[in-house]
Image 1 (cartoon, rainbow, N blue to C red):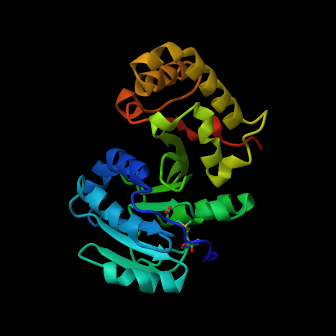
Image 2 (image 1 turned 30 degrees about the vertical axis):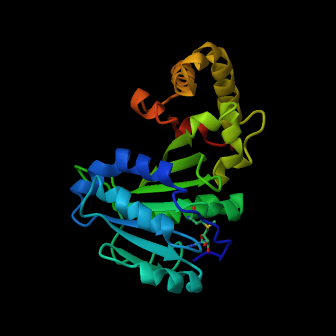
Length: 261
Ligand SMILES: C[S@@+](CC[C@H](N)C(=O)[O-])C[C@H]1O[C@@H](n2cnc3c(N)ncnc32)[C@H](O)[C@@H]1O
């Protein structure tokens, strides 16, 4: 299910997303009986799937990755890269794997669809995730967008119950102001960066906090970012802490940024 789109990808492009997934979802993957992760829409070359496997294995040694692509020639091109724990399959949003995966990562896939399609695709993908149990919150869908070399990234994380959080992740040295990330907002939010919408207010407040934290720039962009995010926590439901902020990340509850109406 879905449509073939441009296959642009790059080695190491998704490192920030991979590291975040390993940090926040590693324990779930370790506990799972069969920790299957899907790299949905890996593109014209299989690099992101290969890298996802190696990064997940640092926290969950039994993790396996299935790369899924809707363009058959890209599956044929990827097959020589199959190895223990990594296979490639032709398919789309139906997710052609027998089990309900612990992780579905869709990076730079929905960007090329219409905003009106996002809700339906999210629902379909969330319904395929491993269900929550007494000891598990269930599988995770990570859907987002980044620039060509992965310096600026924004993604939404969803569980079987729906959207949970939005994460902004950036190489701090390359940042003029937090709203530089606006051009990498995922499809559900990019058209909502206009006055009156929560995501617009959030980026405006983040820019203000960043400006107010300018004196910290003499200690480096990292200290400035940490200070600005700390200020943001007064008005916005930031769900992570300094250990993640140090990486140039911040995660906020989805409900706070969700589009109005
Ligand atoms: C821009 S590439 C992204 C590649 C890689 N994920 C990255 O971020 O570097 C998008 C890929 O998603 C694939 N795609 C689009 N819709 C899809 C679907 N419904 N199921 C599987 N793949 C899909 C396209 O064919 C394309 O190869």
